[in-house]
Image 1 (spheres, each protein chain N blue to C red):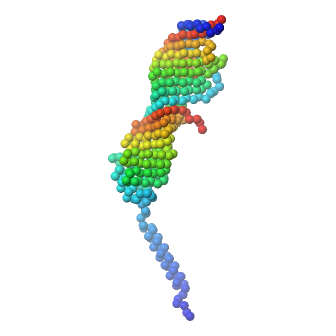
Image 2 (image 1 turned 180 degrees about the vertical axis):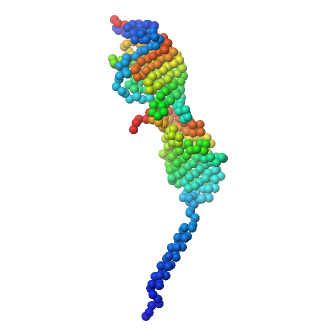
Image 3 (image 1 turned 60 degrees about the horizontal axis):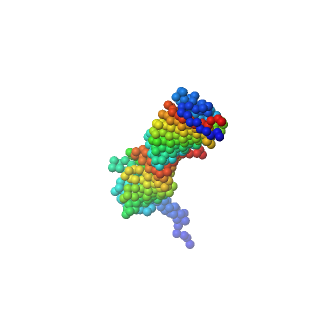
Length: 190
Length: 200
């Protein structure tokens, strides 16, 4: 069988090398490689749902509250939930510049397939807040941030990461962790 | 037999008579004052239109009703392309095909269009129905609702029966909307959803 898992803390066999190399610099990079950013251009969309919305016409801040959910898709499919979200638009009102989720934030995304066709399933959370930027397609979770990363289909490495801040780049399918503490599980060669 | 006179004399008399009548009609119509515009309002007599609303600070001129505050600043104004009537017993002002303007600090802030309009002076509220749409006059957005009410005391517009607020390329939908231009806020409640409108 090839599904023997070898848990390791701050260490991993060859399959987790990319993680280890970045770890020394205090920043973790884990993703599906540059090819992921070269996918055919997909339609990008973002939708926010909630119970209530208050729009301040002077500051142009749109504040959502009650079971807030952000759904983004652009080849990937991501969802973020929080008790409260504040959305800011650009001047032309044709793009969400920033979305800040306040309180306990949960985030889930299935990344675009990389060059090898591998998709990652990322489930992350933070106790404080998360910031989504549509222009850069990044989600930055802060305050007790943690993420579980698995390969869709079950094969390949899986990781549990905690850190001060976790940034997921949805465009490149990479995750950056500041001051990381991580555990990787990976299948061993027979 | 010889006739009593030349026919030319008779003709001349007729022409002079017609000229005199025409001059008289012209003089009468040009010096008569024009009819008051209030007569264009069909269902209520001029006395009803001016007296009862005047007690409430409402002035009617033709198809327009204006309500002002104690300082003389316009609070709201309604213009009707269709008929507009006032019933002094029920204190209801009704209009059709109207354009309603909410003023804040005396300045126009929101414009609403609807097919039906009923102002209830006793209840201090105005109801709109059918084909309701509104526009924030500072250009910050527009909205569509199933039903709409204006509260005279708070100067808020409260929409229900499904509401869409459009700003730029985005539309926010909800069950209800409150347009509160006094506090420069739009509030939406129930099943709120924000999405970018597809390019047409």
